[in-house]
Image 1: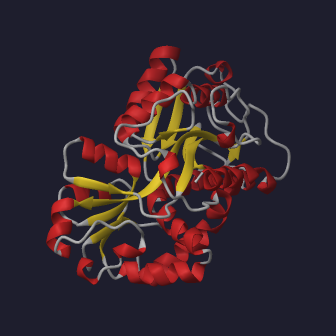
Image 2: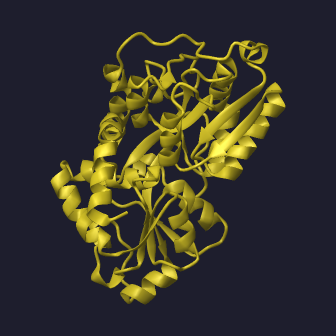
Length: 346
């Protein structure tokens, strides 16, 4: 597992090889007094659930006096929005997976910034400064225990991805649409990496598609639909499932062998209205207090060694992880999403 996790980090750190040209300065736009001082309002585009994002924004404002305006959408929607606003960005900071940073840096939509990274595991620090890690996201499956028993006659819970390919689960699985959701795309990329090639992955996905009852627009929806018993099982990030299980729903958390882990964080938008305010916010989000808030509110895994794991989560050492390459995942996202849409009509 440690070898696999190191490869995840190594793939992320190889982002430097994809960058070209000199890094932009810590400026990047906005020449009014508020921008120059780092005050004013920071606009944050994030795929983080609304309540945790709001709480983090409020805590930052309480400490610094700088307001944070939060726009919460799915990862895919935010990337599309950022590209549509190229040259006239509204955001200062955007939440993303580390693998998305390479293509965005090439398009000069995000900029480099190298703050002190005290307390951050060095494996999760981008030497080029384009992305700033805040959490580790694990790809999992949520199972409604009652519905699973009803549909499968009490079969054991799945331990691998292939054990989900049961004919009696036709119409009983739910997953996010990977053309819109970062969660959904991570699931598809995980299949590519665990098979070692796209041909094997598409063969698996063809069979998986036959069992799908619904593709959702957002990554958090499957955990809620499984929790309420509308579906027997669903693809979701671990933190979404831990949240609904913590609310008392009869949901089991399955870490299929092997599964994917991605580094999630934030980047600074090139030419943003408040560049210095954005820098302060990015630095604050990587501090111990904010990192523990993220774990407590989101139930994701920390990138700091001095922050506790979420309650009910398996330790990383217990998991079987694929060699998830975030750089390649970012590079192939458009092509894979188009192929998925073409094959399955989403």
